[in-house]
Structure formats: C-alpha cells, structure tokens
Image (cartoon, rainbow, N blue to C red; front, top):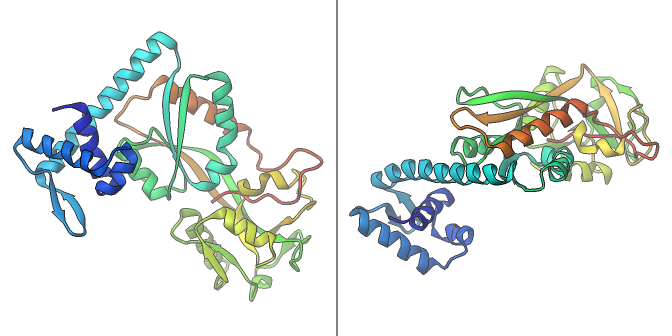
Length: 317
C-alpha cells in the first residue's frame, strides 16, 4: 500500500466522487481509477459501491478511511515537526470561516502573520458554520472562526469578538441620518435579508421576533457582501454585522458616506468564536496564528478611525 494510493482514496471519499477528486489531485480520471483498483486488489476488498448516481464507500472503505485519516495526520505532523526543528515557525495553517470574518477581519491577521512568520502558509476556506465544524472534526482544518456555533464537546471554544449587528440603510433611504427609530417604524419597509440558514441570519430572525415584527424579505441571500451592495443601491434596509462596513463609518458614528447605521430596540450582538479540535496538538504555526488572532481581536473596534472614513459600518455575517 502506497501513500499516493491513500491520498487518492481519501480524495474520492471527501469530494464525494471521482470527478471532483481528479480536480483536487490534478490527475486524470483513468489514472485515479487505476490507483483505486490497485489498492482494492492489494487489500482484496471492494472499497466503493459504484452506482449511476456516484460512489459510496463500502464497509471496508469506511474502515480504511478512518485509518487513512490518522495516517495522513501523522505524516502532516511529522513533516511539520521536522520543519520546525530546522526552521522555527513554518508550515500550513488551515483556517475555515464565514465570508464576513474572512473578508473584513482576517486579512489584517494574515498580514501580521506574513510579517512575523514569513515561512507559514495560511489557507482559508469559506463555508457555512456547520460545514466548517464538520471539516474541523474531520481534521481538514486547524482553526475555525464561526458565528454563534452550537455547543459541541468535541471542540475547544473561545469567544474572540462580541460584535454588534446594526440596522443599515443607504443614502437614498428615508431612515438615512436617523440615529434611532422605533421598531414600529420598520413595518412595511423593504428588507434585504441574510438567509436563516446562516447563524447570523437566524440570529436576526429571532431578534425581529422578539420585537414582535413580521418582516417578509424583499430579497434574501446567504452572502453578506451582496446584502451590503443591495442596501447601498437603495433596494432596502438590512441588519448587518458591524464588521462588514467597518471601513465606512467613523468611530463617532456620524454618517459620512453611502451607508448609515440606525439604532432600533435593544442592541443585537453575535459572538465570533474560535474553535479548535481537542484531540490534536497544534503546530507552532497554528499556535502563532492563534496568538495573532487574539491580539487583533482584542484591539478590534468595528469602525473607521480616519477622518475620511465613509459612513456606516456593517459587520459580517
């Protein structure tokens, strides 16, 4: 049994079929099929049920996959350990996060990592929170940054930011420039909504229910950047995490650009949580990333500090 065969086998399992696995491995489908057949021949067992709709692992395939994950992790840790002995803080840091955190908060952390630890190689994967945590449990990520995750005893959890979610409107909206509105004033307005499939979207839905507001979104999407652009275009108003427009509002809260934040009801917050897997030791590179993450989170303000900052900030979802 060769390591390359295990990599091919694991890719088929994790990508859910041969087609996606070939893209991940950068090999042709005949070459991948050959590696799997060689592995099956050596083991004397079929590893996949091959059906018109795709492939599923057999019982032998499931058992082999559990062991192959341990093998791959052991190899990754061995490689990292040897590199660290020779070079210090080096190696890959696999980060999973939602779009808002990855786009509006993470870049400064990664810039700091590059300056201090140029031999590290961060990779960032964007998914919904539940998918991110499943990838973390499968040891395909080292660190997850998610909003309001559900409790799970498999993971270590640390809240790094408590972020306000604000009502945001564009310059052409009737509420632009208002500092406070009553919940009743939101009745009948066009809303751009984050999908309730995301933790932040569900958090907003629950908040509106507590205010006894029935809001039927004019447009719904799972991409917070799309929500922001639609609000800027005057298609409606939206509740958006402050992270998303932090570069566009001054810390004194004065609207000076295309967006404005308006207070309504009691403040709404979400928690940005760092999640790590309990059962694996972190590499020096991952430990360095976590240190930088905590430092930047402790200094995060969620607003622009320059006089030229454009209006409102909306944090990510």
